[in-house]
Amino acid sequence: MKTAAIYCRVSTEDQEREGTSLQTQLEACLKYCQDRGYDVAHRFSEAYSGLTLERPKLNELRELVRAGDIDVSIVYCLDRLSRDPVHFIIVQDEMEKHGVELVLVTETIDSSDLGKLIMHVKGYAAKVEAQKILERTTRGRRERVKAGKLPTGRGILFGYDYDRQTGKNIANSSLDTVRMVGRWILEDGIFLNEACRRLMKANISAPKGGLRWSRGTLGRIFRNPTYAGKSQAYKTKTLPGQKRRANDAEKLVEIPNAVDRAAFTWNEWLGIQRQLDRNRELSPRNQKLAYLLKGMVFCKRDGRKYYGVPMHGRPYYRCSGRNPLLSSITCNSRTVSGKWLEDMVWLEVKKVLMNPEMILAELEKRREEGTESTHLEERIRLDCSRLNTIDEAETRYLRLYGAGLMSDDKLGEECKRIKQERTRLEHEIAELKHRIEKSKEMVLTVESIERVCELATKNLEELAFEGKRWALEALNIKVWVDGESFMIEGTLPLPDMQYASQPS
Image 1 (cartoon, one colour):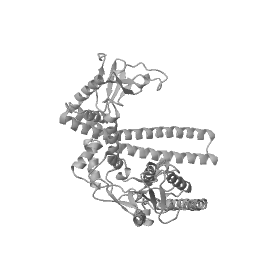
Image 2 (image 1 turned 90 degrees about the vertical axis):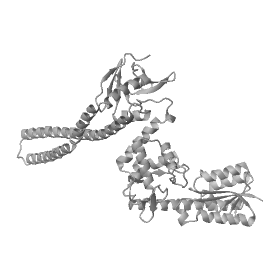
Image 3 (image 1 turned 135 degrees about the horizontal axis):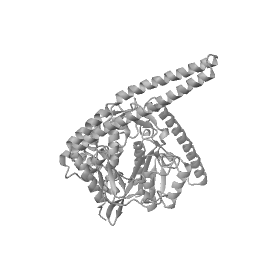
Image 4 (image 1 turned 180 degrees about the vertical axis):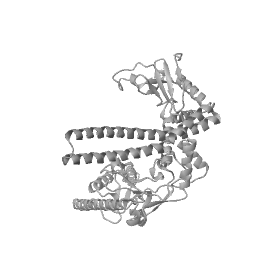
């Protein structure tokens, strides 16, 4: 009895509904094997373009051929194996070389020169048809995007059902799971591995069924802006002979209201991204030694960052200006013991956090500064109105001059005055906009301080590495090293420190 392997292919998931489906191909191939008494040992099905040989399931079939594990390869028809005649001949010759018979259920393969020529012509026709299908599909997707619809239902999102008629993702009950995990990440600061453990412990089904969750699955969900209501078309591109890859940013097209209900607000989604980035940096997989002040230490002499460097198995901080590859002028700032510097900085930060009067006074100050933005926006509106008035006056003076009703000296005097006033107003508007941005930053900083103070009051003495790191980031801590001293800056006032007694 011959051992057979069946290979079935469709170009896209849409073809499952509109063309020769994988199930139809499989049933025809199984019947063919049953009629001839073949033992079907392997079945391969995939949705992949027939214009490339780099297909996961086809590669598995070819591995079986090379290993001599099968006698017959069963395919529904020529274009299901390949739409490129050259690729078809490559696979056919490969199977002949290893003594494996290639069978097309609905077509006959003639190994004569004439038969190969006919097969080549048919393959070329299939390739041309594939290009036409691609053009029609692309044109159809563009029309759907113009109408504000998602291009296709491919890649259904966990938490949504795709409505082909409206071209939108409709929320289902699983979206509550996404929302719940998002709260865990935002409020508890947990890693994705811990989120997987919680989901499996709660017996919550994964996107593909079963109870097995993976970090990669959650990563794809929480890195996708669609869950914040921002959907884009043309996110990927496929070049001839290459795998699918991310498209250029300028070619992305925003699709408004592509979901009927978002899992998160945009600010919540950005908060999740920041937490995921922070978790990735702090992950033990990404660093041999943990650096509590990573990205927070700066050289006061040249303004460059200090970076973590291991010395004799211990963490140290060194100015990047000492690296000749990064700076033509070598900095002579001292290398600082990581443990000592981190202990000293955390000691001072802890003193501030344990002083509620100082924190409350600073929070009140920040709130007052944060409420100033409304007044500043009104001043900007008035200044813009004055700018329009100045422009109109300048135009009027030019008309008077053109009509001979204003002298050269008078025109020069008025233009000079207008230029000075315009410069003053533009400078004032720029300054007001800067103050508004700072006010908005202060509001966000207040929220961070309130959360870190809440965290600190729970168990400040036994705060773990992640908790300390989170607190330092929330307080926007910066450490400036200068020779024998260092200074700590942050949202809350912190004293200058000396480290002349730094251990060697």
